[in-house]
Image (cartoon, rainbow, N blue to C red; front, side):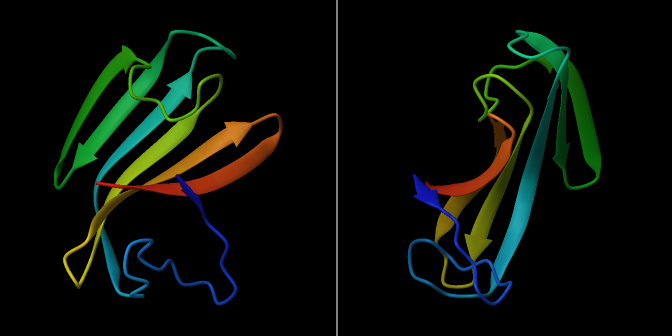
Length: 96
C-alpha cells in the first residue's frame, strides 16, 4: 500500500514514477450506514454500469470508498483507492 502525496497535482505511477496514467474500471461503494454490510455498489466499465448492494471489495472497512483500476503508459498496472477513515479522506495505491 502506497499513500499518495502529491506536490504538482499529477498522479504518478507508484511502480515506475511515470506521470502519464489512465483509468479503467471504476467501483463506487456507498454504504447504507457506517459499518453496514449493504449499500449501493456501482461498477462502471467503459460504457456499461452494473449496480448491486454488496460492500464486498470496498476498500474502506467502515465507510464509503472508490476503487479505480489504473495503468501507466509504461505498462504498469495499479489500483487507486479513495477511502474515508475517521473523518479523513485517504488516497493510496496497490500494485497489481
